[in-house]
Length: 503
Image (cartoon, rainbow, N blue to C red; front, side, top):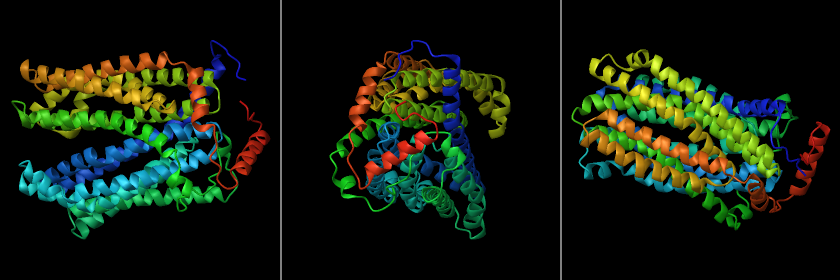
């Protein structure tokens, strides 16, 4: 039984801080590398010409809204099950959840691919520019294989992250990104494929990342443990996660559990992701749409860069909370929550300072237009205030996922962004004549409503009750062949490493 101690000691806090940063640092680095890869994409489109840049921008926005956000959101539904399953050493649940999530994403990709293939008639029906639409449609058609890559990558990343293995995620992303620029130049410029070449290079890079990850997984499965693996919670990758799905994966009644977690997770991710696209659309209807849209593009690039730290903290918090709840240690889950939110508040202040002190230098990276630069310098401090709320809010969403409560996050995101932020943005931007600044104040109001609500939920959590729910969720084994032997072997390894399996 866990000893109930009201206040953690400083060594316990420092140990938890180290665990969170050990998981989060590679994820933050991976997100930053992904951000740089997207910048390469946009720069190459700009080099092809203004029409290609406009069509590519439309395609990127459409693929984000209709595809990547959906796949990413659905995949996060497995975080609760996998992190708690690894915490309780229930490898059966972890493996089956991985297989089911891959199948779910592949099925979703079929529907998304059909939409991407028919983008041109869809856009022409809403009176989009035919030339821009043709370029965007071309990009989307050639990007369809990327849906398959993401359907495999997202679940594998979450699977490895849930057991604390994050460094291979960073290295595989980094190595594939190093090859991304020469591949893009070769296809788009040397072979003169243009926009299709950029789309092809994107999915080639993701398949390269997938290849490196699979090499790591099969190598570690057939070799002895590395020192890094001994430093954290690790379990063997048996049964092999990428073998043809078992009948249990296809027919198990736990599909309902996964869908009940995946759908709210998807809604929560999409609601926040889509709000930025909503703000971009509104910018086009302002009195000076050229300046507003250009500033909106800079704001989105800024928030994307600043989002790397909250994303890493959210993933770390989800893993740590899920592991501890699955292991039956509610006080450790509470400690992980407090440390993660404290770290989020600290990092959000750095984001605020950077947007205030570095707003002019950052704006000049993107534009020399005085009007755009002036508006950018006005709104960036507001975006910094948004970050002050966004970082703890995003981290708290990870905590809710780790404790299998993504539906609460989806509900809070909906009323915060669409019942508070959107109406206020419209009133301030249009009725009160504040323009793009008013839209940013609407975003700030949404973030404040969101963080206040979600922190209230997190700090009122009954962790003992959540631990019992975790036991009910992943404590019952659906036995795969040799699952009992795997768990016994793992407990023996833990004992030999000086760990207490009952801890």
